Image (cartoon, rainbow, N blue to C red; front, side):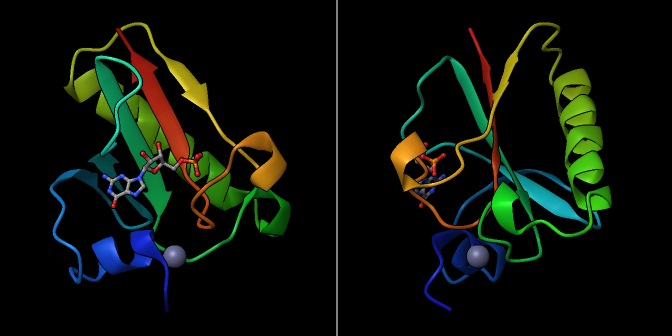
Length: 101
Ligand code: 5GP
Ligand code: ZN
């Protein structure tokens, strides 16, 4: 599949995982817009929030965010999801941005 995040998950594109669990993985954004800019990405290829059927998945992503920010000692952060091209979604594989300065 021609999806950059699936390719990263499948190690076709090298990228260091800063977190991984059963449901998702996290990487540092290649073009950071804050001092800390992490992407939390489900292992399942889902295009966007509009395509989510089982919201248990979204819960799992937020559990990962809690784990990552705790592990990395980030007490204050923003989370951001772009849904749809017109809203700025560039990669058509659901992901949550974690941003902290
Ligand atoms: P979106 O605009 O779709 O919400 O966010 C996509 C994000 O993925 C962007 O912030 C962009 O910098 C990041 N990104 C795109 N390609 C790669 C890549 O190959 N590696 C990493 N680490 N980040 C990427
Ligand atoms: Zn994908």
